[in-house]
Image (cartoon, rainbow, N blue to C red; front, side, top):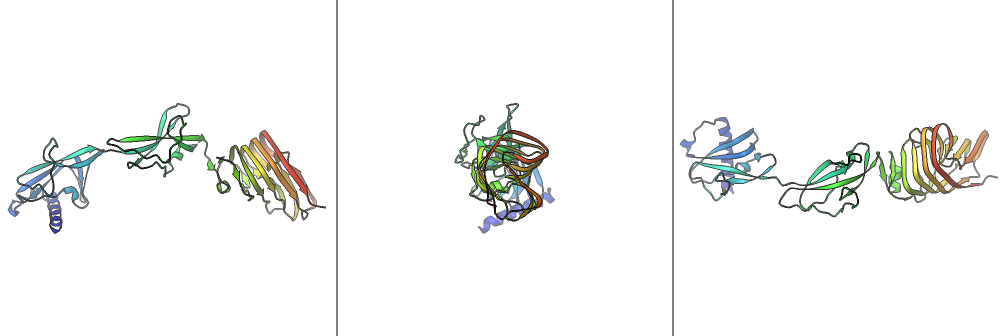
Length: 365
């Protein structure tokens, strides 16, 4: 072990010296045999500089030599190729064995290169208009490695949301999550096709995801809220695409204000879209306190700007007017659940198919 370390150190010393004094003669020190390492198109990089073409070492005849790629901070590289070793002949048929072959006379060793084998997964989609396949990102992997879009590159396509991975461009066969890259003796790229929906959405499948969503919402399945409070933004200006699914078994809590206009949503602002969704078994809470005004409709208290409500159902909903509710003198209470929005005086309200079914129970004397 000490001898090997000494040889590596000596090689490094001779290499650094030869960089500074290329014409220095080492024959008087007994290093009478030279070895030229021909890079064969590669570049040798060390801690000092990059060297092209070749390097020359001086060695004592009959001695073992060291591989320059074993020296600290030294790398031999060639773009698109892997280094396969040193050979005695230009035809690269006779390998040099370090630790076995010795230098007898001046020698030239040639680097052998092999085309780099790459195993990859490429995220791909089919353009909806041109029908052309387009690549998004390529992950380089090892053989037998499973695909994972851990950098979330599928969602880098502008104004689209990734909706799933598929094996085929026709998006008929979902991606097999247990599939492993087969590897092989040649480079192999496996395409992973991405299904998209137009628009930027948060894909939602659970109650927790629903209440945390801050952008446009896209339901992946029906959601049972377990009787918990459903809290959309007080001023909702996003899109809720229900895909025909149901949001059910929830309550709506009233804000702590003297004037209340609310329902499942409080205010729908310009750009809001509620589409293709069923709200089932909702309980609209009315506070036990004094209010100046109380207005409740089937879906929202008020709307401003352009608001779209399309194919929306409210079923099995319930409102209980508590005995302790007091409407102050000059105030008013109105519950009109057949209307989608109570106050739409400042809105361009676009309604395409809305209906609601509420039970209202008044416990006041």
